[in-house]
Figure (cartoon, rainbow, N blue to C red):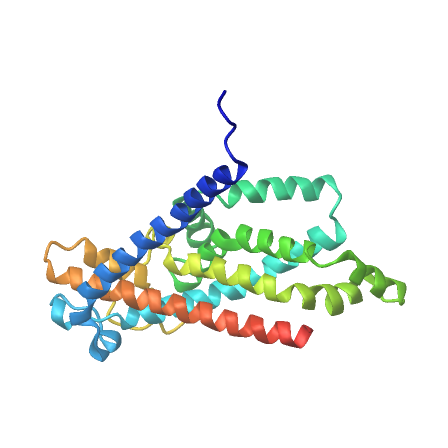
Length: 284
């Protein structure tokens, strides 16, 4: 008569499978990053960061793309964060149980999974042609804001939902209005988690290429944008342009551009972590 398998054996097998699921992607990512870094080292110089695009690979730089990405990031945050957090506050604090709230929640989940090129086509039809913004910096930022808006709303709603109901009830029992409770109790408590979701959404916006190509970002720019209606490029567009060149020297430029973009994303995340820790200490 065979003995039943020990429950601990099943736990160990499951633990090993889960550990492998974590380590294998990290190993693949590490190898990929090392390969890109080694390829980028010959071009990682101050001249590369402060230079303009050139038809000669050794003289090409990323300054217009870098400045364009920073402008897009700031404008996208200015558009998406107030709208997203405001919508989340209304849906979670004022209309949480209605059919409208459930319908919006269902559609937000579907919109968050729509391919980014669809948002690019929508931005081209609405912002570039219907509103008349043209192929400008503000049209590109508005398109990216539209892309990340569902993510901001969903993450902000989850952050608000995680605030203990007892805090709201205590505030209301002391005579505060719903708005005073939301502004002085709920939002400050949920702010660190809202910030984390916002940074994840903005990080996605910084790495997007397809919607910017559709909206009309330029691939060869030898000037910096001088206004919201100016033509623009972005770092992912510049990298995409170099990768598509037949000359192998431009692949080193593309690798260096990828490292610069990753460094920018890491700085953004570090800033968010610092701000989150500061907000949590203040809330405590």
